[in-house]
Image 1 (cartoon, rainbow, N blue to C red):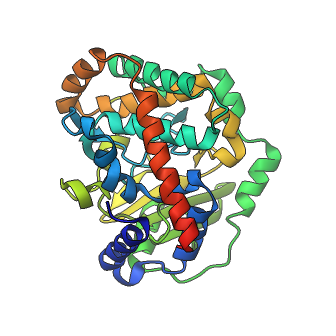
Image 2 (image 1 turned 45 degrees about the horizontal axis):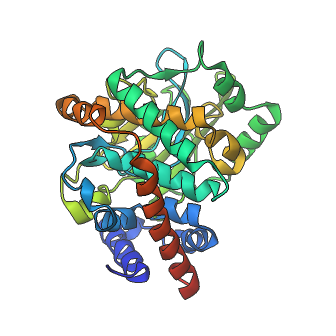
Length: 355
């Protein structure tokens, strides 16, 4: 198996080749610092590595039924948005690495992220059981997760208070900068047509996506309040580097699936993804909500949401459903622990080498 330093170098060279002058070299220092900082951010930053080694560690999943999957699934790949009816929705919200792969891998990666984030003192068996129960429930009866009427416990935990909202908007009070014409065009196309010229600037955010160009457009006061859009450069899923498959991004196919209620502002313009940013359209990060993200009923819902995404691949979902219903529930924890060990070793090797 290729060492982590060589693997990281090869992946970054691939990104440079694909993005050309738009590759953000200055992001790499931040990304490498995150990778050295801890094993959970290392997992977030290295989906390509997961794709490279997962079948070496879990060869029994090579021949499982395949489905259009999220790919880079982890505890922080979930958040909220408003749908076309203005309802508050919760679910997966990053599909940069969506690709066709064995259905089980989204669950294993989510459970691995829980193992790494929670530590050995947590009830890992209970967390894995809850993920599996939620997935089985969701694949049998998929349904979007709407918070406006039901699941008040989650709505209460996720809706930002006044001080948090103030901090959110202050983060985007940035001076303008020149951005590439294609990104400016995509951002303007997603904003209200009567909003005038936006203030645009580069943004550094995320973990695994560091290196991709990312820009924000801000309307300071459209019809009484601010409006934000973010544009990010897209690449083929890292899964395709090691396992082939179409290079066309699967973002919209998953995000707009039949069993989800998507954000109508999520758009793709060529190889640029545009999304809305607001206090109600954001990721939920472990730094702020770690205890919430590891609750059994929370990870159960994550399993259910993964199933919502998988079930939307109508052509493949029936085979997945049959395979899931025929399987016992004691498999996820050992697979997650196996992957957690190899991720921890890679992280230690990377940090020790000065990576």
